[in-house]
Length: 242
Ligand code: UDP
Image (cartoon, rainbow, N blue to C red):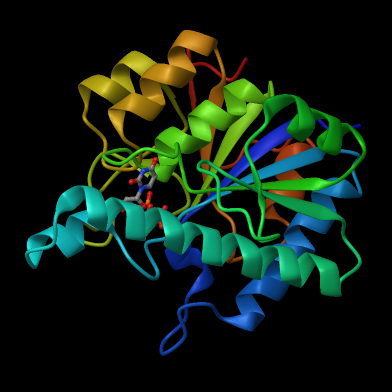
């Protein structure tokens, strides 16, 4: 039996990209396989998808765009990613539904409704949350913490390119040390770039652990963790694995 029954999986937009493709169909297939491995363990899966593979408000603001408009564009990018993921699920006979942090209409997707989301999850559907928190000046990491609270998820899984949280960026420092566990306070004090402070603070307040791991290198990693293997870095109230 899996160690969690309902998880919130945060995928960055960049996780979907490959050279020359904002959304790589092969990566979508991998995401489908990974999510299927969780569903096969009777784990309910909600996803929060980012938009950094297409647009980020901060980058648009750097080249002169109004920040709020840039963030609206960034949030719309997450909706595009969510629709692509839902389409991949559909092609692979996995039921899913896309919800947006702001109303979109036109039959594109429904607005976030925490009760409808919980109902869909308990029916075995994957719920894909898009548009982050629905407000500018936040990130989809904070959106992930918020949606995890709303659907009463047991844990937030943050999939990154790196296999956990390090004391400094392992891409630039070969001697960077990986943490197996951290407390929320340590994560906030160390100002770790892996997630923003608002996301850590929300999870601390609502006692939802965060597990940072590398998802796409090995499609079995998520199911291994769900089966109890200790992988990546877990951020929790006391900095232990409980
Ligand atoms: N965004 C926002 N509010 C939110 C979440 C996201 O305004 O609650 C915008 C912001 O411009 C952000 C972009 O959407 O840069 C894409 O989200 P994010 O950068 O978190 O995506 P990721 O890095 O996970 O791909």
